[in-house]
Length: 243
Image 1 (cartoon, rainbow, N blue to C red):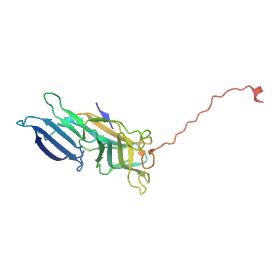
Image 2: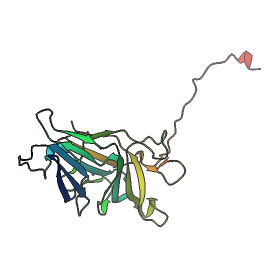
Image 3: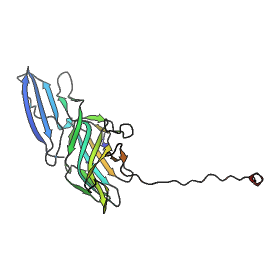
Image 4: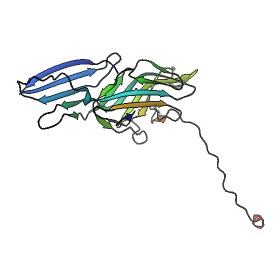
């Protein structure tokens, strides 16, 4: 299954301990230059004399995600300086296979924010870029509902992106009061599955669902002006009834 929704080098800090023949290892992965990953923990119960490499969870256990950013605004340039994924599961426990069960993830119920340091990405009109440029972002398998700005206007629930960006060409269509990048909220529905590639597609277009959340309620960034012209069906009238 391929999902449509833009890696960074992995930095690892590991600690391991043995208690009552149970080996538990927690591996923290943090954002490093040009790469990112999620914190997770893994555990399994084994006999003390067994020698098992606990320093590696199979890459197939993760969902592999990349982000494609598209600029379909014909007259404006798009600058992206960072992306934050909000209200997603950032931690969980990977259980290795035993005689009783197959390997599986036990995800933590706590949701948080993952910051992706993209560097400065410049997109001209009708341009696109894929982030990361090589590889993908490993995610703990999970399914999340998108934030609904009409029902949940205060970003309290639901998954969304905060894209720190600017849209400009001579004048700033979107940005802060000084003409710099500002964060726009984008609802995001995800279904990340183990060993499945997914692509998050962010499309900047005149009718795109990007929201300004700086006021009291979310407002669409780009609202095209449209109108319809209609004429009522002409009805013949008896001239005698006109006077």
